[in-house]
Amino acid sequence: MYYHSTLLCFSFLQIKKKQEFLFMILEGQKIDFERIDITDPANDEQKQFMRDNATPKEGQNVPLPPQIFNEDQYCGVRKYSIKQN
Image (cartoon, rainbow, N blue to C red):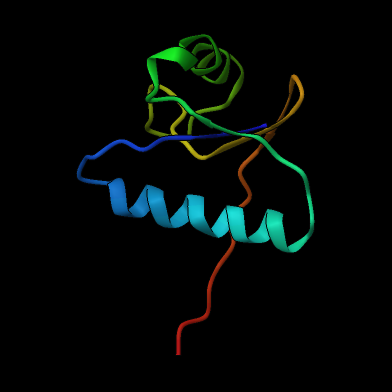
């Protein structure tokens, strides 16, 4: 499962870039995944699951998307760097 957000906020572009990069990696590796938009009220249960089981970054009160789970197991988010020309 892959938890993501479509929030329109100051850091929206930063979050969106991270999400799109993760989608590209997962799709490129042909890994099946489910996108869950935690801003959709229909996904409140999944949003709470993410918050209860993911680890927030230092200085954050709650974990922010994107977050990756394999079923109920938290996988975290690995930092990748993109070389820019």
